Length: 337
Image (tube, rainbow, N blue to C red; front, top):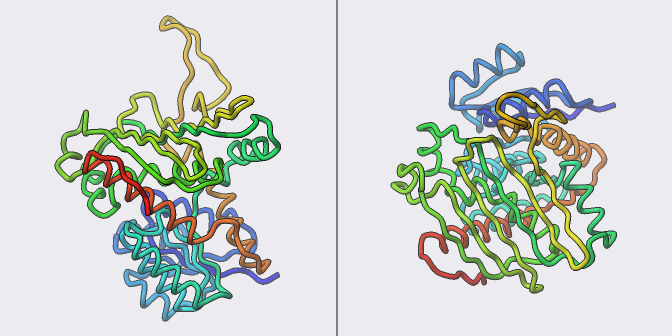
């Protein structure tokens, strides 16, 4: 059967994993080119993946025959690179978020409408995790009655490096980096749009984040249009490991996903007492979901079907992440238009 030829732009810590999946772990896919401005990343693609490399996306799009483009670059580059891929006649998958501003998101949506036969989607990986999918099915079946509250968090292990401080300037900050997943889950599980937000937090451990207008720990309280509630938090300073979980509370019960975030079904009993080893980084927790999400995009291309996620889903998430940021910076309740 026909193979889908794929190019990728961005080969950082996450882009590298996408490239390996596309190169070796998905049937009927051929990774044909990679683009990066980082020489070390290009060396990896040349030596480990044996594919042509480019430091300029425009040149790659001109010289390489491909069917789809994966955009796994810095957040500030997403919108422009998605548009370039669409205008080159390609299907496009982008890592989250779609953009830092709503105006950029809308522009991407407008361009995508001009190319109705091409798929353009932003990946929200937790929707492809088996546990989250199972929880959604149970909720849809009425297992916990009517859901009215979601508590969700994205918290990383405390491994702060200088590059993370600098990255904030390109990424939009902690709400765009971390909480877009939790925002998407609130919309998905509670079947409504976030209407008002109140966000607080600070750089409690790393003052350098405050110096660039960001934080190392934040919390947001939200009300949705249908009257339901969400409490969403993010943190960069967990000493115990990557700590992502979501709880959905309903009128007849609740569902908790991801706690404890342990590596395996092992408990250690020794002179320190009893303990479970925790997941170190997000990839350890969601690697299977990333692979499933990538396969789903390829299958949509090959089957000629539209994915469940839309660009407008990504736009709505960005709207809320911006509201979180404004509430945090201005110290007031924000009403979304």
